[in-house]
Image (cartoon, rainbow, N blue to C red):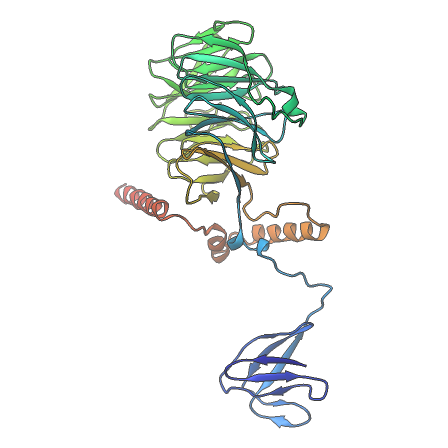
Length: 440
């Protein structure tokens, strides 16, 4: 016999007396049982046990256990848990990161105290430590085969490191976690950025100018200067390896072609561009992260038509940004609003962000000396999914995509809990934008 209690009524279910109800004149509720749901009790005439009761009617809604899937917390966005874990080990702010294109779970990080570390994302531990530079590490880049790491810093040196093969083969290297640089190149100016060419043993550095280096030479092969300000970001094009884009502290973005031996194009932004990232699937397009809290996407063929760090997903459909407002945001490549925004109470200003090589995770480095691992999809369930679970997730995504234009659905999908400073800054920005619109 099942019994359901409430302050205003009781319902008994048994074999001898199927249903006996003591209703309240104006009460309505839902009652759940193991195999069915008593839909509601309302003050209308009903017949119970061959007698007329003018006070209530009980509606029973049958439910098949074969077609019913229990709702779990992972199915709701409000219960999404994007934060996976933190990787602690640096003793100063993390300034840059680089992915190993030849290994899925390896990522390099450099800090302001000159320390460089190789991390295993799966175990969230340090695999190898590189005794880096005398000053801050400003840039990291890895060769296409994943065997050579290039680092540059404010001590005016460029160092080439051999990535230990034992770390790639998942062997235990706890006995010797330090590495020795293969080459050290000393130059006359400090460096702010570095990137490796996709097809050849060449890399580019940015500082007082743009220098093109070879692994086997101690001096630059080519040098470019366009203006007198410092180059703060540099990226090679993944489709045409002889083309690279740079940004400088004079608010300029420049395109260089190594085959021409001279700069190809240059334009000036309203604010300084902190980082540039090319779309790996559409290499004619790139996105710039600016000081004015916005990201701008450009077509390199039509530059006249038009945060701290930015990185594209390997699929080319999304990119991630890190900002001084202590948040990590994920954008669609053609969208104007962020799909996800991540933040924690302890995370400080975010200096660098990277997508994992399988586009499933996002790694962020911040001023609090920690690397943090996030899920690219906040409500995604970790681990192996059953076929029925996979079909259910695909169905839910299809339903949301079908009705995303409805105002109520759009409001629920875009709703996020934000820290008060971020919320106030967004409100101030909206007010400024509206004010400028009214003036025009």
